[in-house]
Length: 418
Image (tube, rainbow, N blue to C red; front, side):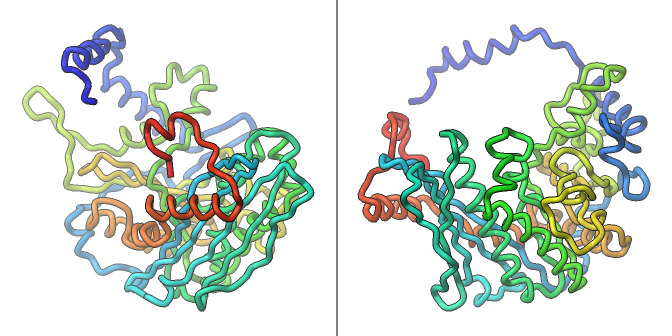
């Protein structure tokens, strides 16, 4: 039911009880200090973790003009994987399904119809193995089941979700790499952060990097993906729609001489660095005629360092480790007050012309669409598992496994979270 107005006012009035007198101008001044004094490079405990690829710069481009420019890439492809989200059943199985698709602009209907499906299953019953090999279906698509078990009852839902998602996504990208003639844009980060996070999270998950063939296959796939596109001289990048990284603000918090760090995450910092304002009367107003962006940075922060670490023995790489390093730039769209992040391997961004082509392609599409590039949106639409399909899949699993979903009262109260 709708919150009664008197109670809404009672809750909203709590804001008056939060005595926080920091001015937005103070935060902006702190952001400028970070830009001038800390990012060229940003030092962590063991040396530089973020540094400009060339020089520290903030740039801007007229939104209307860049939207009308000819696109640098005649064709672009996008890649995404949608998931069911982990489901726990009363017989003890934990299951997730991922469904990967590749988009093409202009459209390629044959490619759009091809999918890669991975069903990941966790079971504590070691007497049963659900594992299958890849099998074809529907003339061009393929599927398989991967089975995992963990020594202790924790992280099962995280594990089945990440294994399904990243195995489907990376396999589909490699299988259809030859269909990409000019530019491939992943929906999300360049590398599988949902898996890489395990390496630093707990010993149970870290052990999977040595013991799980599926984790090994995922890591190998992303190495192969970079090497395949480098060999074909076709740029590869990732488009991050929801920037949640905290590497910069976390590092600044450890730098005691900086003082209080006012941002919850890096996106908040970059928004203040890239937003343009002018005084109108007694107030400042945001200028919305131009998109703004940073220079490219090389990142060795946290999980970004994994694939480019020269001492990483888990990876079988054929290129110099530096070629796999994550580089990124940040784009700000003032019309909707949104921050986006573009990630690409150093193997591509080391070349100034390639960097510029990637920038112009993505800036033009953001300007035109007021959101993610068309290839990303189309891949997201193709790969998504809608609520109706999710309900039917769960019902099918319940029937085939002769069990029921292990629901709780929230499923009754709010409806199942498909």
